[in-house]
Length: 135
Image (spheres, rainbow, N blue to C red):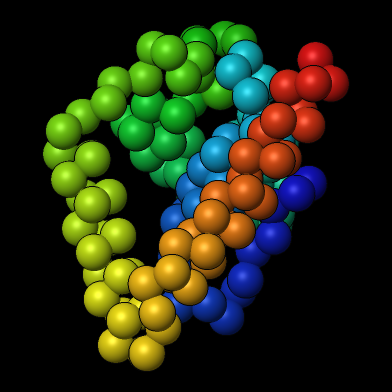
């Protein structure tokens, strides 16, 4: 399984699962309609409590990234059907402002910050573009 748990981390295990599945969706490693492993199966593979996986899946569903179909499993949701909430965009903007402030305080020039952002974004979009070409 592609999820790696860091047992000594300060970050809760369910949050680690959420983060890694979210990143896989953002990169295009998981696309609309892909089925996630069953709660018990993933818990067994990661050697964690099934309630931890269930909590992660529940929060991913609340965030609109996945949808659970009773009796069928949990699937990556269609991006076209995801709600874009003004509050989510505002929260993203606040995080970006924090990162920009931190970068400028470290002495990084604005152009360097833009280049750094573009490089990080390219890591996600290139992976996503490759995955879409394969389908």
